[in-house]
Length: 127
Ligand code: FES
Image (cartoon, rainbow, N blue to C red; front, side, top):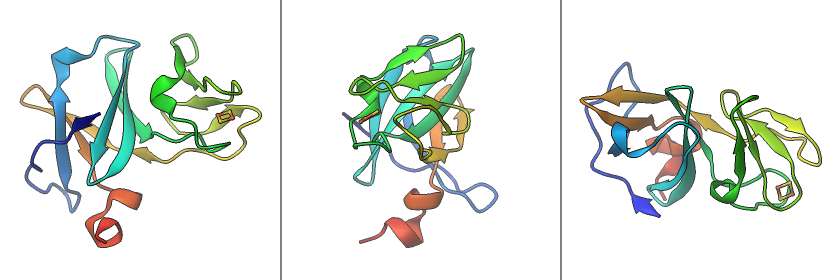
C-alpha cells in the first residue's frame, strides 16, 4: 500500500490528503492507498477519480483486489461478486447489500487528493 503524502491546505472545511500523481493511474485502474491507517481504494474511471473504503461491506474483502467494470462503473468484489458503484458507493449486485463509504477526490497541481470526510475526518479518525 502506498502511504499518503502530507496533507494539503484545508479547503471549505475539508482537509485533503495528497496521495498520488494523477498521471500514475490510467482509466480503469485501481490503487490501494492508506490515509492515517485507513485503507482506501482509488479508482480512475472515465477520466475522473473516485475513492471508496477498501473493505467490501459483505465480508470485508479488500476491494483493491476487485475487478472493475467500466461499462457500469462498478467494482466487482473478487470474493463473492458483490458490486459497488464507485461514484456513490451503493451496493448494486448481491450478496453485498450495504454501501461502501465514499470520499471526495480532487486534482490539484496534477496530484490526486482525497478529502478527509466521514471516517477520515480528523475528529473521528484520531485515536
Ligand atoms: S466479501 Fe465482497 S461480496 Fe462477499
